[in-house]
Length: 140
Ligand code: 5GP
Ligand code: ZN
Image (cartoon, rainbow, N blue to C red; front, side, top):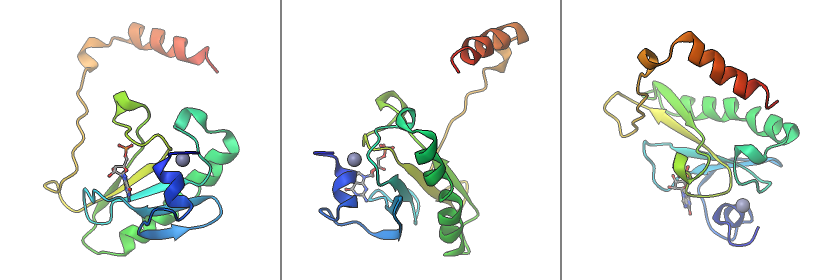
């Protein structure tokens, strides 16, 4: 894919700090290093976002993520947990439109990663939940 920065990294045209690579994925350190070890896992096949994955590609990417996550965690005993984040669409903070998974090691509640889940449960009675679920279910 022309002008895709991650395709260029995969092709070796742009340098990256690689931690793992095989025929299906490349995993390299994110330049932002939100926390130390912040890694991107990228399918070698160019797909823009999660909506473009077929089952085969999804299986090959997702099956590799736990072993990459374990290797990162094992590399530093001060890593206590990990957030795995996948942004899809500019509205969802995606800035590079070649799908990727952020593996963000967590060291403490005061490290540099933040995520806010607002609790709107007071506004959602069962009837509303059932209605939302029905709308989604009929799309399969
Ligand atoms: P997104 O916002 O699309 O979920 O994440 C894109 C990520 O790619 C950002 O965290 C950004 O720091 C990272 N990134 C952008 N350009 C490069 C690059 O050239 N090299 C590396 N290693 N990471 C990059
Ligand atoms: Zn690409």
